[in-house]
Image 1: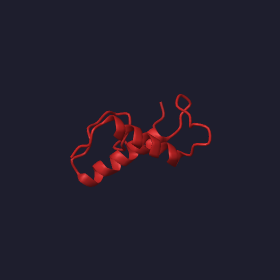
Image 2: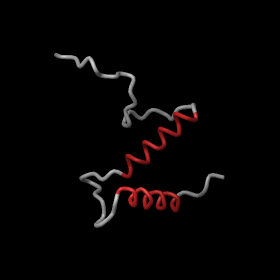
Image 3: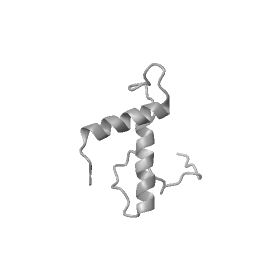
Image 4: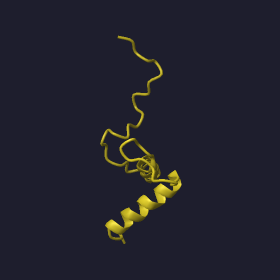
Amino acid sequence: MSVDPNIDYHAHDPEDGEQRSDDPVLREAQELEARMRRALATKEDPLRDGESTSERLRRLEQEQSAQSPSED
């Protein structure tokens, strides 16, 4: 079994289910990463006709804000 010497064993895996960091800067980065991953087109959830990734991100954020009440 070969081992890749370039693997970063402490790197963030978006599917590891870890809780968000207590550090506000890291938490902001984690939330941005999660938003961007949701905006990416996949085989199971492709872009709509003529839709760009940025348009998809805006649409998903609008749908999310419509579903959940404001956290003020």
